[in-house]
Length: 236
Image 1 (cartoon, rainbow, N blue to C red):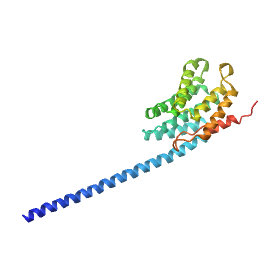
Image 2 (cartoon, rainbow, N blue to C red; image 1 turned 120 degrees about the vertical axis):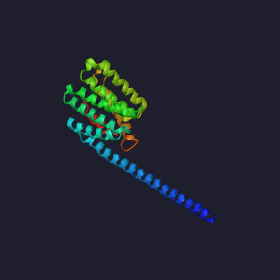
Image 3 (cartoon, one colour; image 1 turned 60 degrees about the horizontal axis):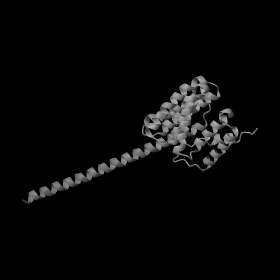
């Protein structure tokens, strides 16, 4: 009988030891997973920070194309994050704006359509976001500028609607005020534009930029330099 009890006691000890060992394995595995996730997040933030910094140094359509490709590769891996797609779209928009300044209007539809794909992807992850709606406004504006007379009633109206949404979702977004100021500044007076009113809006945008704090280190933070550029233009 004692041997039988000893066997039961021994079996219990073995079972308890096995449970303790299993707990240690589970804990070690959990810690390893957490470590890998932390490393992946740190690596993601490092790469994104490096790429975002390049936005200020890009000058040509080719520069922005390379940057858009970089953000696309990040977006393909980080499917649950909206910012890589946002910056890919922004890079294409900046490419389009350079092409517009160079008078290469025939290429702007293609560039705008490329940006649109990434805006759609960003919005599938992040809803009712002021920054994303502002990019949508900018895409519609690019498409309108291909032929303003023919496209104002379509893309021009869509652009205004998206600008209103961007302002609704974040009234203090300085980039919204910047883009509004650009619209006012460059629109002819007979169509409601005014360089004087535009300049006042640029000043309002700068006030907002001075008090603006991005939500994270990777959040959109562009536009202040552009605002200062307009404010410092010589007055006629």
